[in-house]
Amino acid sequence: MIVITTPTGTIGAAVAESLRTAGASLRLVARDPSRLPATLCEHADVVTGSHADPAVLDTALTGAKALFVLVPPNFTTSDVTEHYLSFARPVAEAVRAHGVPRVVAVSSLGRGFTGPAGMLSAAWAMDEVLESSGAAYRSLQPAFFTENLLHQVEPIRDQGIFALTADPDAPLVAVATADIARTAAGLLADPTWNGKEDVPVRAPVDHTPREMAQIISETLGQPVAYHQVTLTDYRTRYESSGASPAVVDAMVEMAEAQAAGVYPPASVRGDGTTFREWCESVLKPAVRPTPRTGGDA
Image (cartoon, rainbow, N blue to C red; front, top):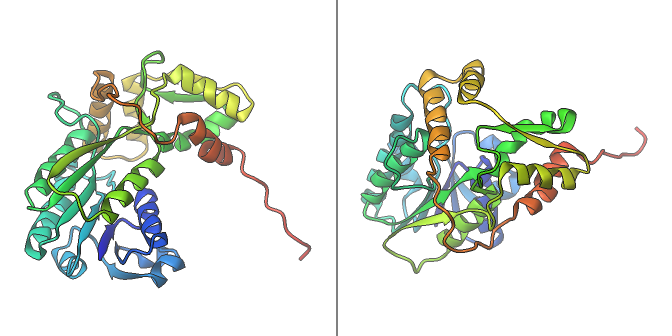
């Protein structure tokens, strides 16, 4: 039995679907099971509740052979690290109590960075707690999610621009969420690994934002430029979105860490989704959705 948390989220849903397709025995922990696809509900046990709840975990981890952990975002929390640990602590206790042999969790690239890193630091704090569970552990360590650009579909389409805090001419380490899910599913389905290991997940090539703009332009067939925003503007954007002061500080700290080189250069070329492939398969359909056709009513 493989237990999947956050099965209604982008990554968790993709992990669950990949394992379902492969015929794995699944148990899904979902706060709102009504959001699960019918195909998953038909082929998996479903436990209703949060994986921060010890009682839910006690039910979910009975007989579990592997567990996938992802901490859901909370943009109103008063303490970002404590939010991560509020999931990590009960998970570690339940894993220990049930003797779950393998745990895979989504953390962040750059572990070992000595400076403050906001959201990234919180994820690394989670790693330490989960590693104490006694289970074999794999910390999946992605970089900047290319899917973050989907929040800028309208300015890309209507103004021909996207904006980040990154230096326009410095390589931006990124990854498609599909590659995170693929890596997680592969590890969860493999009963042979043990020990503890960090697993970087990143695109095969690191492009600068200017290069990304060029690739987006070529993919969409329209000029798209990159605009570097200041950290002050970045802070204001999150403040105006209703994020808590703790989350705003954590997001700015993360951006500062990224500018300081928190993500190390790639030691080997990966085999994941290239940025151009992601633009063709994900960004382009989002910017230019195919019109629906139908017959007469």
